[in-house]
Length: 392
Image (cartoon, rainbow, N blue to C red):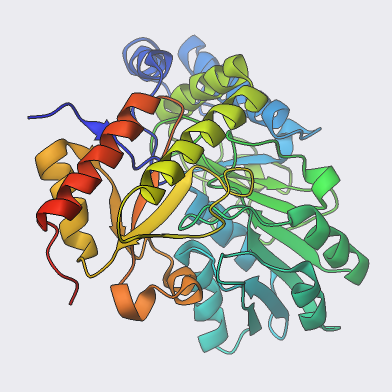
């Protein structure tokens, strides 16, 4: 079997830094207690781990008050807390045509229930959302605009700062999904006009699966999605009003949070500018290798300065699933094939009906130039041999 080449970092990063594995094991073996639920030394130590992680996230995301960083099991739950906690019956919500299902499914459910009126703004074929198109859809009853910072299908980086200015001037709120960008590029909520920011802990932040969160901006209040034990105000049968406890019911994934703290520490050690430059160089080489591959079509900007390290492609007359399978079984190269939980994005770029999706290559800080060159050679071998099969 060939050495594994992991190109599915947009789903979850792999491998993790060694310090992440060590932190998770250390918590399980040497701490093990539930943070905030008891007064003994191990519970206090568990609470310290959670607080330290919250502080590191606040520093990385340029958040002044760490208490406004809510820790959740996933970016999906964070998005649900934000959307369902802010929007009220009769409100109008605006989003884009390239959103992940973690945005579209709660919005479509609320639309189907008659709770909200929803406008989906079409993006360009390369996945870009024009701020003027968002502005044209704003109404007096528009309460929320939801956009992804970077597409999980084609990597397109959206002009969030420009959109934020328009949304703020209108008096609505902006929720941004940074699952693909947190840890890979600079983010400043205040400068970008972001009111609510949902992030994943297990992608570019290099933490374990089962980690994520929501940053609630100043002067933003949300209704609770889940109520329950917090370890605070146990004498009250109503959920605490203060943050973060208001939105953190139930025992947290403390071992995962311990690992997330070390993933963030690794990101901070490397530095966001260095990570961004490395990922751009790797992305440029992927685009170069695909340009050298006969019949390959790349979707999205095709420019490493305008996208994250996510590249989607198809091969002319060749089944996408067979291509991904051949890369895996013959060469040990792991990619993501299909609709990547974002059917709207594939309708936007034109791959939904004709292809049923794309083959997606998504890179991380542990990938190398040698791996990408091997990918290009392998793909051309598949193309030349016809082992990918024919589309349809």
